[in-house]
Length: 114
Image (cartoon, rainbow, N blue to C red; front, side):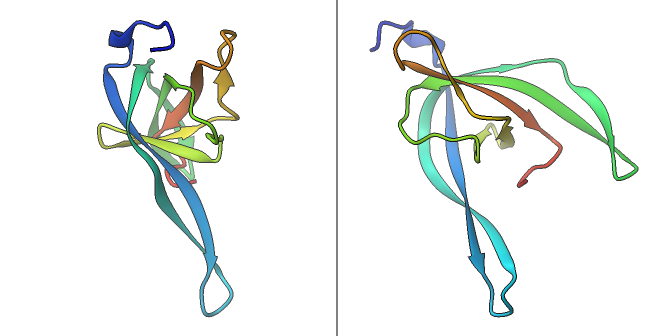
């Protein structure tokens, strides 16, 4: 399909979108809703690095997740793979081959759930 190597997308991911609602006191409640499941993807994790956040050391995992073009995918969504949450950094990039593949730069471990 789409002229790409079908074995390239050997991982399966879910994509979630952030939903904001108001509680009875007028406060914002953030939840995540499944936007797509069982999406074929190529997950390429890079070297992890340590970061200091709120005086605690946390691990951050950098990854690039490539998946076939899905209309409506935005940088406000997150990707779930192998039980890990990956926040999309910025807006996903389209490859130069006429909207066939999204290339998402992601982080995990810091800011899960934004």
